[in-house]
Length: 319
Image (cartoon, rainbow, N blue to C red; front, top):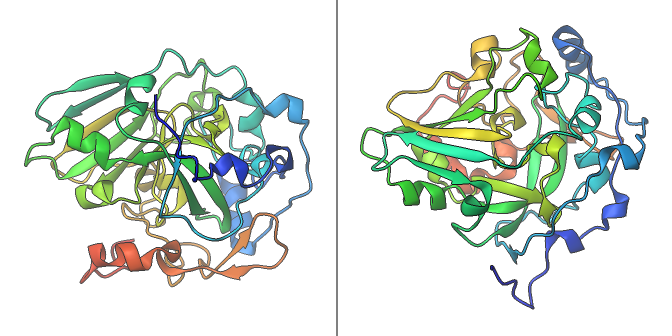
């Protein structure tokens, strides 16, 4: 059992959970999504019935992290009710409803590839690898909206050190569950399923990269990637893959889902960059809950911690 220090405050205590749950459709398909993003069309007026989207989550024992942003967290209701999770739906409000009966137990994550010994973990075993921390991170979607989310997890490096990758492991590839019975979106050829993502080894080992099990001090809601996901705060949100069942250490840059779908718009690195316009301007963003747009920060504001990893790289060429 992990013990919370009495002097430290859990993210669940930052903002009452009762303050959290709304947001409106931003797209109903890939074409509509692109057009809406291009003109900055955001509607934030739809409110769902809380009884339909909130599940009984389990409290997690955590300690406070030193990596938090000082910005005010986005209300719980918005984080859990406005989601990009195409396995369920392309409608931002679809996942909250469609995920209610999603089965997250039993759940196993297989870790293999270029490692000293392949391992399979259930979620409880994964959560015991290190002390769970509250991490308040900025979250920036390539569509031009953003949030501030109090995640719960620990650095992915704890798992990587446990499985001991060999010298052949230069990249880490993640795979989401493939189950069209539970994921109605996987019945559509919109993307090449299952969803995959990847990181260079130094990115995966960076202390900001979070193996994530919860938000607001509780276990992850299904629509937010339960039971385990990755969070990489200096990259666009689609890099933070959800509902992971497989982690492989590989020798070459892995093929990732959005990069395969539109390589000119979704690069392997996909660091938040206000100077790039893959199809629409990335210079500004609309923070959920705010009316006016704000300027987007290079590396989503984490440049002082991560920019050195990309020293000498042409950040327009290596989007």
